[in-house]
Amino acid sequence: MNTNSGKRYAQASFELALGSQALDTWQIGLEKVADMARDKKLMDLLENPGLSFAAKKTLLQEQLGDVIPLVLNLSCLLVSRGRLSLANSISQEYARLLDAHRGIKHAEVVTALPLGDKDKEMISHRLGDMVGHKKVVIDARVDPSIIGGVRAKIGDMLVDDSIRYRLASLRRSLEGE
Image 1: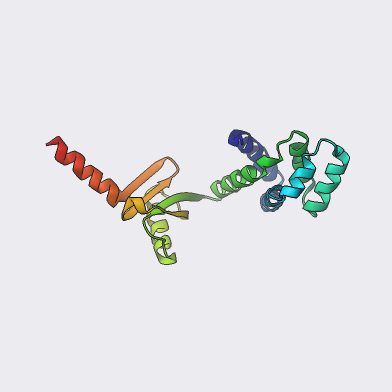
Image 2: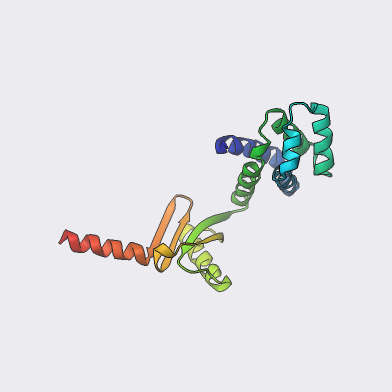
């Protein structure tokens, strides 16, 4: 899957949504398209070269229900180009653009053990202070290989306060002496 194409479609969709002040409506529509694209049987029908485009468009209209016309047009365009598989990538990238527009940052946080809600909130506040954002959403992942501590990536910034990193730093400093 070409994520750059997904980003381009998402960017164009975001600009249209921003211009028409329909940011949330677009997000809901793109999520519906992404959900639809996860249905294997439906995808087989929409990718079937023996089915006319008019039939595919009717099928899309039925499946998507009440979405704004431009979201339906985008899904038709994706089907006509054989790119409906990009729908999930487009939806995720659109959500990221919407969060950025609203001043929300996402942080990938890796810990050795699962985080509780209080821990997530504390880490969110600390990362928010570090990057100057009021709202940081934590996307938590567990990786026992870091042994303990936290590794966080927010934008281009990496904060590695894991035990594994500390041990590696200690080893390098001892070898250097």
